Image (cartoon, rainbow, N blue to C red; front, side):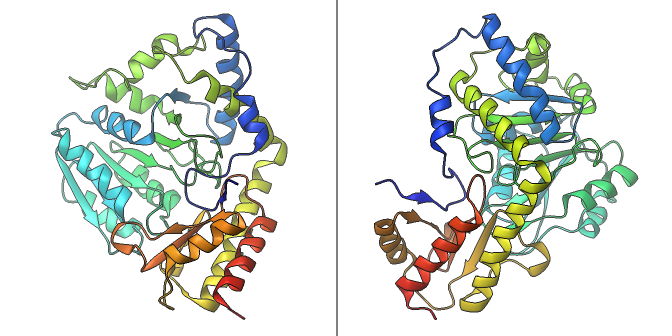
Length: 357
C-alpha cells in the first residue's frame, strides 16, 4: 500500500490525474500538441490572474530559478531575500552563475517585510529582487503583495522574481495586479501532479530585460520560448504526458472555483495550526503562517521518524524537519487535492499513535 502523502511535495496525486497521462502519445510538432498547449495556457493565465505569457518548462523549479536570474542580470546586483533553505538556494545559484548577488536574511521562522526590502533597495541600484513567497522549509509565507507594491511604487526598474513553488494553485496570486515580473512553480505541490514540469508566468518587462542580457542562456531563455509560443509549441520536447495531466487538473481546479480552492487550503491550514498550538507549537511567526504547509516545533521530543513509521502502517506519511530542523520540527502539508476530511483523519491518527487527548 502506498501511503497518502501529507508532505510538501510531491503531493498526493489522484487516480484521474495519473490516468490522464496514459492517453496515446502525440508528436510535439503535431497539431494535436499545439491544440493541447493552446488549451491549457489560458487556464493557467486565469489561475494567475494574468494576460501575460505563461511558459511550460520540462524542468524542476530549480532550473527556472537559475534561468530567471540569468535573464534579469545586466550587471547590477540582484537582491535575494532569504528566510530559509530554498530562498538561500536561490542566492547560491546567483553566486554560482557569477551574478552580483546580495541578500537580506531573517532568522528561520521569520518573514521578509516591506520595510526590510525598502531599506535594502534604497542603498543602491539593483537589477531585480527575488522573493520566495512560501518558504517550504520553515512554513513561512511572505507578504508578497505588500512587498511588490512597495517595489513597484519606489523602485520601478527593479524586476520582481517570485518562487511560488509550494503555494501556486493553493493561494491567490494576482500576477498582473501585483506587478510581478516572473512567477514560477513546479506542478508537484499545490497542482497535485507528478513532478517534472514548471509553470512560469513572465511579464513583458522581464522579456524586454532579457534582450539586454549578453548571456541569457539557452534552455530557459524567454526568446527561445517565444519563437513557438503563439503556435502552441515549445522549442525543445515538452513533457507531453504531464501537460495532458495538467490540462485535466486545470479543468478540475476551475470547476472547483478558484475562491473555493483558496478557502479550502486556508481551512485545512487553520485546522492543522489549531492542532499544533494545542499539542506542540508553531515554528513560524504567527504573522507569516503558510496556508499550504505547517512547520511544527517538536516540543514533546517525539521521534518524528518513529511517528512516520507508525503512520505508514495506517496509510499516511508526513515530513520531518528540513535540514538542521530534522527531528526538531515536523511538517504537515495541506495542499493540492487533499481535503478537510483527509486532514482531520491524519490528525486523529497522530493523536492515537502519540496518545494525545
